[in-house]
Amino acid sequence: MPSEKPLRLFFALPCPPGLAANICSWRDSHNLRGRPVLKNNLHLTLAFLGSQPATVLNGLSQLGDLLHGNAFTLRLNQVQTIGHSFLCLTPSQVPPALLHLVEDLRSGLSALGVALDSRSFLPHVTLAREADALQPSTASPEFEWRVDRFGLFRSENLSGGVHYDELAHWVLTAPSD
Image (cartoon, rainbow, N blue to C red; front, side, top):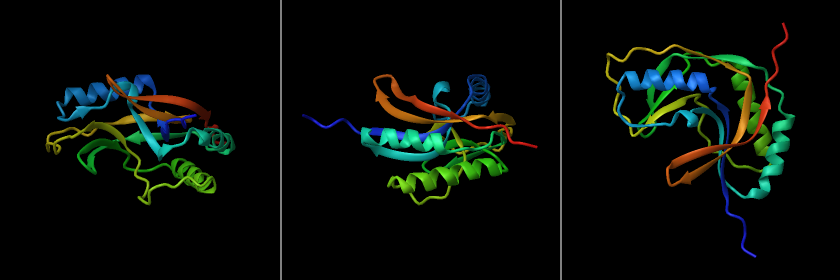
């Protein structure tokens, strides 16, 4: 019996549809060059797991159940080019609740034996790939995102391009005053 095909997985904050539409409208109005990321694919990666056997899904789901992060507001107010010409929105200040969620997630993944790359966490939403350098005239964006959930996603290469499928999600709790 053939083994199951590995899954390309990541934990992320899914961009709410209304915010995704506003971000894409802003991006498109500035004629930023590159291959635009589809509106339905906008997200902020918390942990990229890469190719994993389907057998890890149960453990990843249990990990999500154990995480108890607080909801927070994320202000995406900077545009920068990251890595190999990825044009991204980034926050000028990273909310502590986001850092705690990432830290708890990475600790849990390590306990499950899931190896992550050693790069530091850099919160960003990719707008376009193979992007040109920004023009000095590009206006700074100002997007406010009330983050109240995170999810486990599968990335699939389909004939129409890359598609992200949410396999599970978990609600972040409102912080107590």
